[in-house]
Image (cartoon, rainbow, N blue to C red):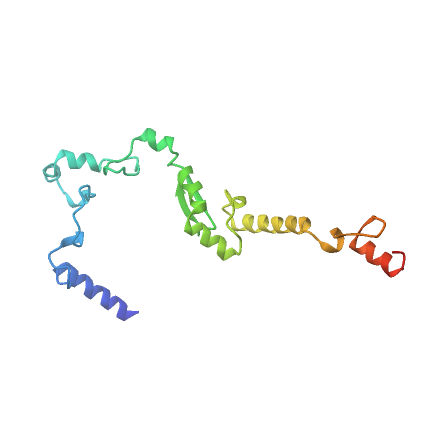
Length: 186
């Protein structure tokens, strides 16, 4: 474990000095185009004058007291849209490892996504529409047990449901037919 910390600190020193091979003089963007709407660390500025040098447009982008999700343009989405989509509602799914989904739409879509499918597969349960809205492992297991019992009752059982006809046209189930045949009545 000590060796791991040593490697991490060594890397951080090299990164701070700009000596990581292949990433020299490229900064935190790692060679990509810098993001237009980066988050500004307000703790970095000690006076109002320093903060004003950043410019009012950049400061407007920062202001997000409701912690609304960002839209495609890097600005917070309107509050009415946030409420309309129900993005303030958190849905947790135990099958997905207690993963949180924000908003009803994201929650309903997650039943078809890989994380939920993998969780159901690990439980040995097929991911069918019967299990939509089921987020608890116990509920899923109970429902699967009930479905299996119900399918067991409705399965075709040849010993009871298979029909036989004698020479006179009478129809019997398999058990009755074999009993009558043993007795020599047919």
